[in-house]
Image (cartoon, rainbow, N blue to C red; front, side, top):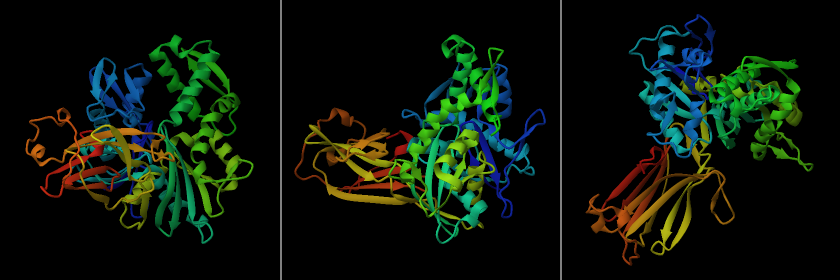
Length: 508
């Protein structure tokens, strides 16, 4: 069975490949209610970890729980050993995500709108990833899906997948004059935008922008804060448990809004509080403006400072569970006009696009961008200086079907090379990385053949770095695999000594 799986910050959605159709999979909870998503929630039932709808119910009853744990994967310091606190327990984040995805797989097989799937039939899936996810997040997500029993066919950037869904649903808007689509993807925890060129069923991401720390959760926090203030309280006064209950209530109230809503009610400590919807919209206006500013490089800026879509853009496609808020579509239309299209299934658009990507008969192809640069800090002059080299550009073209490699060869000038790798979004005029800069591993490579023969018996950090006159020829090769994960191979071409690292697994 082929699927598209969108592991979301607040909700996880699944779409199925069904003879050229891509229906969203519905799930039945223990109360017999049917939803087209699985809540991305984990809770403790006594000492047992439970997930999804059952965890959501327990959370509402005050059980220890975690929401939005996907956001933790984007933390700069996350590793396979990172733990999170749940009640009085420490749980490894990778195990928690794996267990949740095992729950998703189990629900697909035995408790969904899909006919019961035999245990020996593989769940082949294309899975989504935020466009600006770093290698560590990509690596941990891939590991969790595989450990949960999914056969991962590919990992596709979420807004790129939504571009597939746009072409599938709104192909008539594309013509010889308008061949590009701008995808606006506001999820629960992240915002991404991609400019996609479409030629038939061939898609090429021309550019993308994103913010891994802005999503629908932030709108919930704003509403909860307004409700607390109206009740003459604050997060500190409420305490952690009551504040989280208020955030959950705010999320439910936000999701009930429609374009004609004027008032909403949120309970603060069992006290109903009524809020003016217009006041809430004014409070979140800076968040909406931040998403528009983030994607500004993908639009045209006019002389008065305003923005518009380029003439060859067929539409601005609004997707993501966080984009349901009426104020978002309203502000986007005020800014960009009638070419703003909102997906009829904003929370499932990415899953549908991922299912299309997993269907070999659909014929859709994608060329994407790396979206974040990779570089290395090196020690020079026997460690007296540090230089930075750009290795992989954020604009590097990558593919979901094959790896892309770049390499370089040079003569080593020291007895030891220290490579400190970072991922970044931009560089300044001097070539120094700026924006979101994330260290993600280091390698110490012995250029001295005598040190190569010592293995691990002498730690290289205890050896003095010194210049040499007759260093070996060395080749560095950097590979971006079909999942967007970066690996490095450094080889002494004289002795054949080589070191290989997957930079996303924090083992470097």
